[in-house]
Image 1 (cartoon, rainbow, N blue to C red):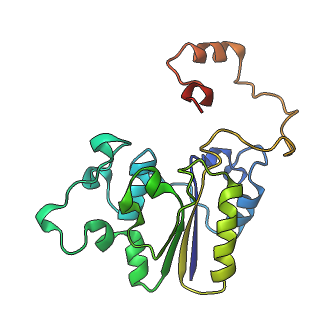
Image 2: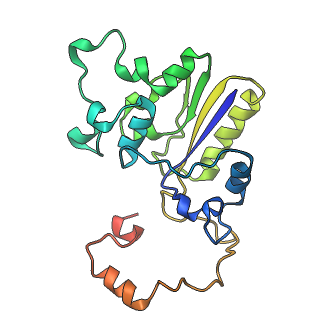
Image 3: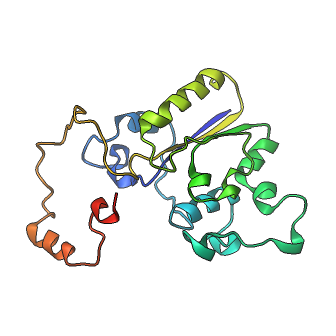
Length: 213
């Protein structure tokens, strides 16, 4: 069996057509969803990014791993202490390690471990391809690495591939000549000048420009 995990950072299913969004925003994802299983009752045990991915790959809640936030002690895994053997919990019991034991070749295309200095994220992987821009990569940077790996490995069996795309997480950088199919659509009824003014009075940030991006 071949397992492909597409990690689309910050993607909200509410804006995917296959989950009922009224705009045709995701034709390629919709095609994949039509051929497979679409889940509607899945929740993250921890948030944001680092706690969420740590929980996913460790199979444990943040209250157990110690990773419950970004930065400081909240981002630092708990010291395992005397109970640790030659390897730690992340390697002994993590998802990727279990796939290895089941005979899978595990591979990842992602800078996430370096982005957060979260080296436990790489536990259990045979291959790690760091795209090198710390989560600011556009798809044009990631895709050539993806295509090379699949040209070399797609025909093989029993592999697991984790691919990290960041475009939704970063400032909007589509080329000027990229089509804008929603340009002439009316603004949603709930988006009023009154609501916008009320929002702008609240504590920021209000847009990516407020974050220095």
